[in-house]
Length: 221
Image (cartoon, rainbow, N blue to C red; front, side, top):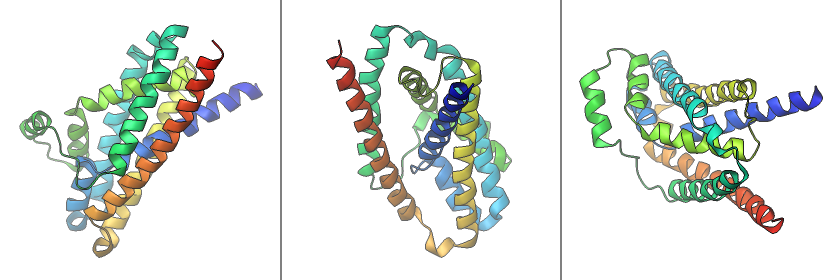
């Protein structure tokens, strides 16, 4: 029982950290909150973030349901160790070197304009929905977490992880919406870029841990 509780706690913490870090880099949701929050207040920014979180967790759930179990074999697990190291290291360096906002793919922007959301919640929901890269990102992350045994391959552990992702991501958007609504002059896109760089440092650290595990895995073969 103690082992099960500790495994679920690891899944929860992994979800919260990943949900928070994924939300920090400067993207269309953060920029929308930054631009519209001062005019509409905290509630508007919060609802944009909530819509984004709902779609983010949906994509994450789809990734776990359809793809993570493909990496159960030892060979695929070793391959995912390598792929996850390269992906996390790449993203970490990318965020560390960020100098401006992350552009929304033109195709995703056009689709979002066609759907034309009328509420704050749907604005956040549609912007994530129209970005298929989010799904691809979570497919890789879900397989990575299962391969590293940070999330167990059962739906109890996966559900706890999804709850953690929702909590972590929502915590960031609540914080951002509050700060933007009350401290506009002290918060800008440059501040978001700096936070993005900080999240990049954390991701590089995670990549080094993954790399160390990969070295240990290869050494025992």
